[in-house]
Figure 1 (tube, rainbow, N blue to C red):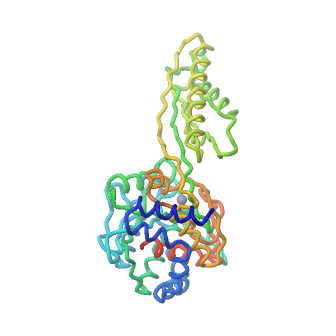
Figure 2 (cartoon, rainbow, N blue to C red; figure 1 turned 90 degrees about the horizontal axis):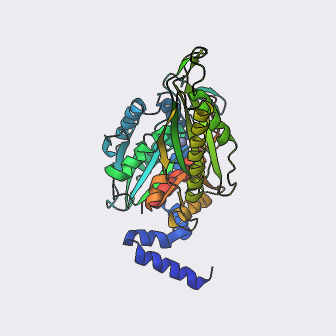
Length: 421
Ligand SMILES: [Zn+2]
């Protein structure tokens, strides 16, 4: 880029954005370099590294409190207590179950929301006890997102230990409903109601590793049910069969062709229906997930999906001359908007600079996270990994390797401080 163009870009930001944000945007990498030389910031970085064993303990403690989809309240209550113990102000649980606490800056704005998600993908009866062997901790949810929850607490504690005073205010949040059919309900409520119009920047700490997610992969999720009268498998034979219709639909979906770039995916994740082997089912259902980082590709895939359903329904009904005619119910149960923060946007530049300043590798990622909502609203947002190494996220065999995990905590801390200016 020509130097003249660069100046023009900075000027544009100054004109288009409110004052505080413009200053922050101009600082870029140089600002982060200066920040790491600050005595209080240095002390905070030392504290966060020193505190890592405690952060890992908290990760384990939180992980052993079940937080199934739509039932995050027990873990939420523990998180609220932790916020209170760390001296956050105005600690509260909002109408949907998000847990919030403020660390006031010199001014109310800019306001940074720094968050992790409370919920897991695991059903209520899952054994969430953890086990540890050397540097490896095993347990469902240990990385996604107990790591993020613990890192957020570690960031608060280190800032307190070092007496870091930020110009802007940080609201720390444990969100509900990030996973699966939760459909980002926590973060949707945060931006739509609880903190509407008052969030200037947003960070979610989610999972393990050191990546920076700046591309929001959108998704459409459906629950689909084929329904008919059903009957005896022998006595009522000759009527349309919901399970067979479902099979026809899945057969078509399984053959979908999708672009590799932008990455676009589809998955029939759950199926069900029927009452016994010798009954024609009165219902057969499936849950389907489709994703793309590109809104147009997602729309096209969705259109193909609707067509596959319609064709499957028509074929099954025609096969039996419309005897026991089936009906189709389709419900959109998940709608996550796609979008992206440009690699050159101030928040991504800051996240990259902070990572580099600590001598860590930079990886820019895409994903479907709490940041989808602010990114879609045009509010600067990134999702960062919480450090360490994770395997088997969303599986019962999930594990977390604590080797050098303090790198992730230190990066999160520095990013929080850098964005609260
Ligand atoms: Zn997660």
